[in-house]
Amino acid sequence: MDGVEAQIAEWRAYVAQAPAVNGRDVDELDAHLRDQIAELGAAGLTADEAFLVAVKRMGDLDTLSREFAREHRGRLWKQLVLSDEDEPARPSSRWLEALVFAVVAGAAVQVARLAAHFPDDDSEWLLRNVSLFVLPFLAGYFARRRQLDTRRWVLTAAPFVLAALVVNLYPYRADSATEHLVAAHLPVVLWFAIAYPYMGGTIGPHGRRMDFVRFTGEWVIYYALIALGGGVLLALTALIFEPIGADVEQVVQWVLPSGAAGAVIVAAWLVESKQHVVENMAPVLTMLFTPLFAVMLTIAAATYAVSGVAGAFDRELLGVFDALLVVVLGLVLYAMSAREPSLPAGTMDRVQLLAVASALVLDVMVLGAMVARIGDLGLTPNRAAALGLNLVLLVNLAAAAWLSMRFLTGRIAFHRLERWQTSYVPIFALWAATVVAVLPPLFAFT
Amino acid sequence: VNINKDLVAASATPLVLAILAQGESYGYAILKRVRELSGGELEWTDGMLYPLLHRLLRLGYVTTEWRTPPEGRRRRYYAITEDGRAALAEQQRQWVTVTRALGGVWRGSGWLPTALGEA
Image 1 (spheres, rainbow over the protein chains, first blue to last red):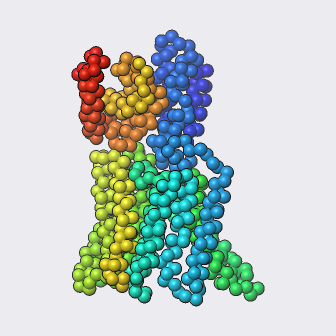
Image 2: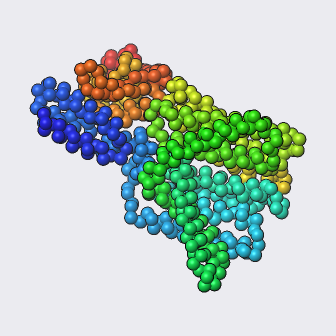
Image 3: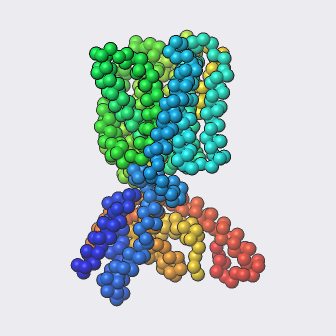
């Protein structure tokens, strides 16, 4: 029997190499294999024969590991990209491809700046359009990597063309609030437009949408890391060259925008190809920050409830709370994407619910006071945008809190929470598009 | 009969759910039951059952628990949930409709002896 034990151990090690198969799965398959061997042995086969037949019945490892990968996308995320069928691997030229797109994006930003007569003019036009000089290249990068056909290329380009038209044909008044709102919301709209090529020319499947959400989170982390490194580099450059009288300021003014634009593509490439680095970070970061945010939010909610909101009011507050809700939502989504969906509810889920509930309590108080204020002073474009975003976030988080309560009490599966978030993604895109396309005419471009 | 791959795949979920509806079970026993029920005609690659079970788990159709029975090895048991029963009922409706349609057309053309009779 020892011989079979050794063979089983070898088989286990072999199966465990498959990226989407984790230790518990191997245990499960192991138990199955042993049951099968025992039964075949009882039927009169020798141990060796029984082992061979049992392994054969289990199926070949490639197919098996692909089936596991299909079900456990999240686990495979570190090995990406699991495209529809067996995507032919094209490993070598990938970084070059990313680099070309990054360089072109960096150059495009400079062209835009020259067109806007930078730095002589403080150009509103540039501010409004800058994302249109960067994000199309990211979309193009994904369209190329996912090998989209012509029709899908056209569909990928359509939102960008449409956005360019809307943003440039609207007659904004000079220094108008709607123009600033458009500048802030257009990148968000275009980011969602990238989801289409990212998901391989589809918008439907929920699994893919979760991949995109996950991609967004990881992209933010990589971008922040690159920005940090770039900042250190620029600061050191300044310190070293200043003494010999070089005008570093002038150089930085030109290098920084190109770097920032190129980094958009480079970060995306890093997410795609170096996934496992962040994959190990995501759960740690959530573990670290979810409790901290929960503590901060609970204290804030208690303080505001005691002191009342009205006293603390100024015009920025609703904006601050929008930012807070965005961060909380980001935390929820990030935790969700890092979580193994089949695990039962744990402490982290409770802590997270506490954070979300406190944020909701806070927000409802602020919202009440804000609505009263708008009733007194009227609706401006900024207030409309902030209020709308607030409502969109509030609905999402309220439902998320409700669902996770039901999940914690064991009445629904975690899958339902995921489903809610992935179904809600288009609403964010729609709201941002509304601010860009509908709000300006509504407020007569003021 | 050599049953078509797509058909095997399509019938896998209702079969597993139906077997679990009769009582909790574990992977190996589920497979044995499938062989029994189909008289050995439905041959699954054993390993493929597990990704399927994990999918049902994620969808909340089944729950799972590792347990060691008194005389036996540690196994992962699966039990059906309310959601799972609802999904099974829905699948049953669909399959009955399909088999009824096929049965009707085959009986009409005299191909079918009795096999699909009551479906």
